[in-house]
Amino acid sequence: MRTVYVNGDYLPETEAKVSIFDRAFLMADGVYEVTSVLGGKLIDFPGHLARLERSLNELDMKKPAAFDDLLEIHRELVRLNGIEDGLIYLQVTRGSDGDRDFVFPDAETTEPTLVMFTQSKPGLADSPQAKTGLKIISIDDLRWGRRDIKTVQLLYPSMGKMMAKKAGCDDAWMVEDGFVTEGTSNNAYIVKDGKIITRELSNDILHGITRAAVLKFANEAQMVVEERPFTIDEAKQADEGFVTSASAFVMPVVEIDGTALGGGTPGPVATRLREIYLEESLKAAV
Image (cartoon, rainbow, N blue to C red):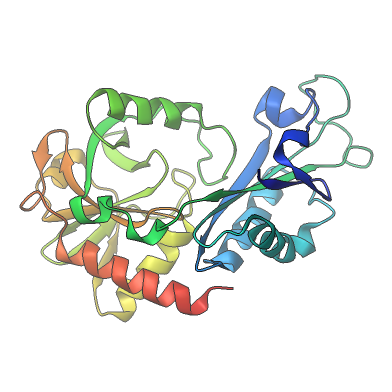
């Protein structure tokens, strides 16, 4: 049985409780981060912490009392649950003032809720899909306009995953005004003539922590990166594609809406970037 963290206490998961009036439950009024664990160490933790702080600030949400202790809480959960490879999920909500109201509760009297739990995923970095690649469908992007804030409003991305599953594919890329925004839980990229193309940062996409690291490593490896929107038609004509996320790292894309990319197998750029990312991130892991 897992040990989880709830508002200062380490508890068996069966004893963990959050109020039915918690605003994340009633209003999706919460933010989250997912940090990967490889070899018992945290990957890209400073980036996740910085993005969490930004999300809280953007929503005018108070930091939980344990904010400065988050690194130690992560490490303790890894230790208590014996996590070698896996994930740590962290969620901060605006808390509960004991009722339901659209108006924010008084931050002076209502403490935020902080919950964390682990997911054990042995061999996380050795996913078989990294060798076969993902098959993608395209769907309309019907999310709200502030995708740069990592909120728990994940209904439409979940629906997108199910649309992909129903189509016999692995994931979906979302399209708005004719251009790809991102995947349901990842940032999207194509490669053409050796050039890596991905949408620029804005309120339209999540500011991926893995995205930032991968683009940094790509530049250091003398790869050409072009940050701009691209269409599904352009993607279909690309030499290869890939996605990045905290749990999938760099994952090749081999098919979009039934059209194979390259030879229908993972391309050299995505494969090399995955190698570099894992190697460098493990060196810097805490």
